[in-house]
Length: 392
Image 1 (spheres, one colour):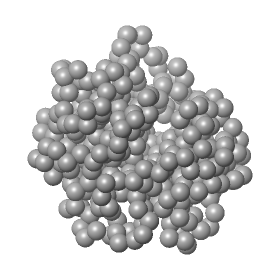
Image 2: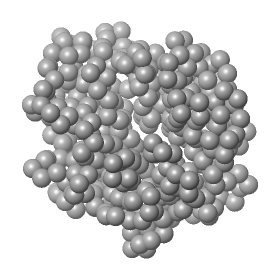
Image 3: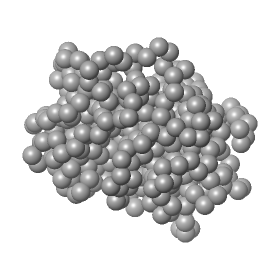
């Protein structure tokens, strides 16, 4: 591994996000048993080559010894890297910024009833998002381009996890409609073509069942299926998807639910260049056989047509050529999870650490850790990262 894993350094509670935010809302803190604090103001770095404000969820013990759920941030653009965290009512999975009211962030639980809105300007949970009694959130959502609608991937737990895309009024978060995901156990979803189409990953039912994993492309206005993409083998599900500007897809997968010991089965990465066929990567065998269990997060660098994917139990970050569907490089880390591009697109930023939270920077040019950079200790241990400078 590229470096030793030390104990996380203390994270000093500042104003949430460490940049010009007000104190945490007192009503929210009272509900969570917290205390109010005076605001702290920090100026943004004026240096070129912005890396961004990284946001991620966590289930961990805080530096003060409190066990719970958190939303953590790492600001790489301060004179010194700033780390902060706030308490959450559940373990967040997908995080969705509002496109107009940029301080609003919707956070969804994976396989649970937890969902909420966070106001980044005050650093507090402003309200919970409810679903129907027979449903669970499945981890991800999206806002319409005009910010008026919020979509969420949900499953009917009383009907073999039939997939539903619930449609909410983004002002009230009341359900105002729905349409099928055209599969079972929908998870990741993305709006493309200005919101006219939606790409959804469907995990499928358990191993041996009839509903296969798939990626569906849906006409949002007509609520109809445009295309259903299935895999070239039934052993993997459809987890998360990254979408290139030309429509190319990179899909990461876990072993199908119900297949023996899922921690020992092999997960996968599947690529579909624009206009091509979906191909699951099987070469080089030394790499793909080490992609044990779930391959979790995925990002695409447009300039280099490069896909980065994390495999936590395999302790691997792998890099792939999207257009040629071939392996480029691999790095070893302890339990890598989230991956996202830096604001200036020069680096992949990766979270890692089994039971701990670290973040490191990987050069897109060399696919090695950035020289002179040091791993940052955080509370972030969740599946994903977003790079979101909300008040830029």
